Image (cartoon, rainbow, N blue to C red; front, side, top):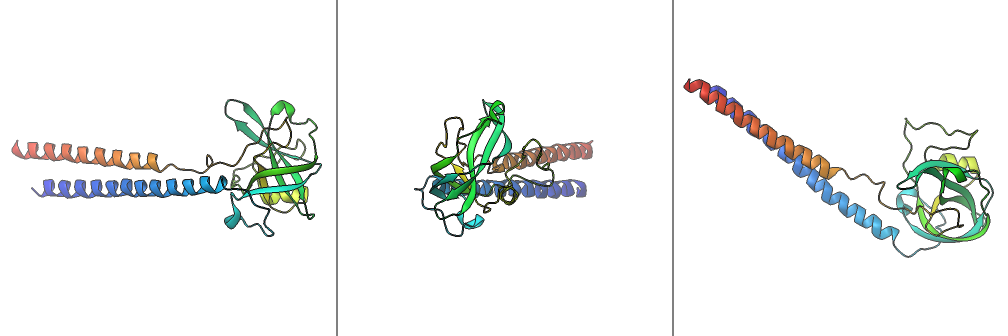
Length: 223
């Protein structure tokens, strides 16, 4: 009898813990969906002028319209686009009216067009400010010889091009040969549904195994 009671308590407690973890992930899923909805609304807002002192936490995703001059010099960030294949993001210096110089993510070019000469000069750009979190301890250092970067590291790119550590990602096209890759929420992780399914599945398995062991214990006692 004590064995059956122990199995029952152990099984119920384990199932309750796993169900609680699954419920918590559902709550996190609802929270993340609300955050993504807020980001999408912010991205789609009407553009404003470039702030005097842009800050990552306050101005991330801020829609901006800026007139200025695209300067010489580019950084090429390796990227792959679905249904297109590998290529590069083109990052250029952008001197806005007033003399400030920021980074401009002009968009995507295929691998074959990496070293083509692109148009520079006056441009009116609509896009969003962003400070992507793409690099970590496993990200390779940029290949300076071939001008290949493996992540958009805003401070490092700003130092390389002599700009402010501010990145404007173009939504409007800056020339026909460069396809804009506007900011979206695709890079924001949202795995809470998968986690919830995992915890609920484990709870079901735990409950089933508890039932099985209880049945075996009762059968053994009767035998």
